[in-house]
Length: 369
Image (tube, rainbow, N blue to C red; front, side, top):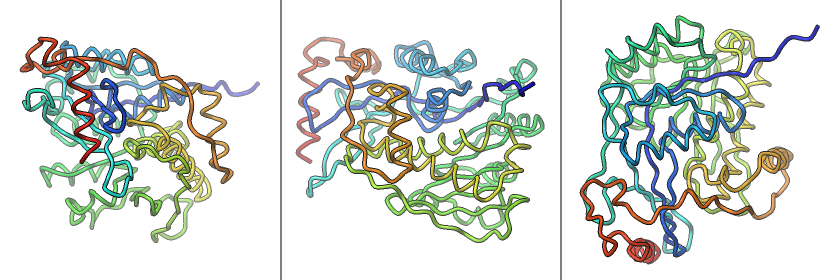
């Protein structure tokens, strides 16, 4: 009798926001997606067939409902995404513009383009909330986090005791002591070369089982301390060619999700038995997903345009070193909104200040920068 396969599951907490994306190269209304590093990784793993669960403090505001609806669409369980005390849902305004040389560039803004007010910022779960939910938490093959706080660390310790593969993807650090504690538990550590300068001194004594540093167009480098891998020296891996580049936003999240989909299905025990070849295969798969994503606008734009069969076909072509054609497909209409007044509490809700014409003006300004 063949072994019954179970769907792998991942639990994540950290940066989950509403992405408001406008393409300054075209005249169009903003596109709205669940975003943030953690939000993207969970949604992508859901897209890849995993069961995903988000732990957060989102509110019942319009931004929060948009995030919850989008995550749910991609097989992410959100019943723990509105823990108390709830906070206004974080919002990140993004514009796709171009440099003087004509190359697309992705810019991030924390203020409303209509009224200039700051959007709500990220707030981590509290220790009380983390401890309250633990008796009802199910086991997870992977526990993912991208921010550090006392409450998040409490969950890290819980899932480490459950045998989960602990994955930490920092973008910076505000508390060195908490950061060191996170490093102590992390089995997989992934970060970008652009961000590492803010915490490089804290990595000196860390020895995760797998450490990955992404290098943008230059690929990535990694080192293993797995039992089946001899030597812990850094190894380099080049990137795939991106023939139809539109936007690199979110490609690091696709890389992370692709890697985890290949190494994390059986938790820490299964990960610990992997060979160097299997690790290398997982990294290449993650890089292929990152390259594919660059052909679309936004951190996960391709998920709304391409069917899963076409996605799998494109990834297979990339892995074989073949050039894929121009990305196609019709963008879902429900990712558009005409008014930021739905999400910005300080915006005047009158059509004159929140109409599509206003956002087109913002787009034209972005395109001329």
